Image (cartoon, rainbow, N blue to C red; front, top):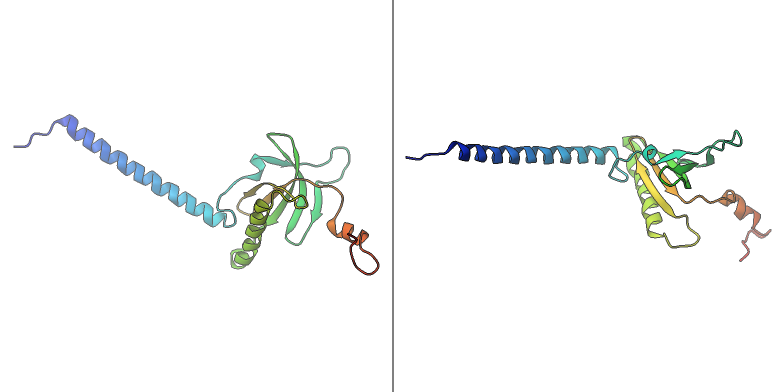
Length: 164
C-alpha cells in the first residue's frame, strides 16, 4: 500500500509546473531572439536609436542637421541624450530581403572595421550603433572641416599627387 501525502503531491506538481513554465519562457525567449535576428540581420539585435540619441538641428539658423549624403544613406548631427554630447550618425536604409545579403555584409564590415581601428588617429572613432526594422545607425565622433573629397582636391598638385 502506497500512501502519498497531499503535501508531497502538490510539491511534485508545483515543481513540474515550474519546469514547464521555465521551458515555455525559454522557448518564448529563443523565438523572440530569432525574430530579432531576422528583423536585424546586420547586428543581430534590435535597438531603438531614438531611445539614446536625437537628431540635432541648428537653432541659430534654418540649416538642417544633414552633414553629408552618400550612396547608402546620410550623415546627420545627433546628440546623445544621457550626456548631451554631439556626434555624427550615419543612417543607412536596409535593402529589401532579395538584395540584402551583399548590402548587409558591407554594413557589417564597416562596423567591424570601425570597432577594430579605434586607436588610429586618422580614422573616425565608432561610438555606438543601432539597428531597427528599416535602418542601421552608425554613431561616430563628429569631425568638422568639410568633405574629404574637397580637402583632397584642394591639396592635390597639378600633377595629381598629394603633398606629403
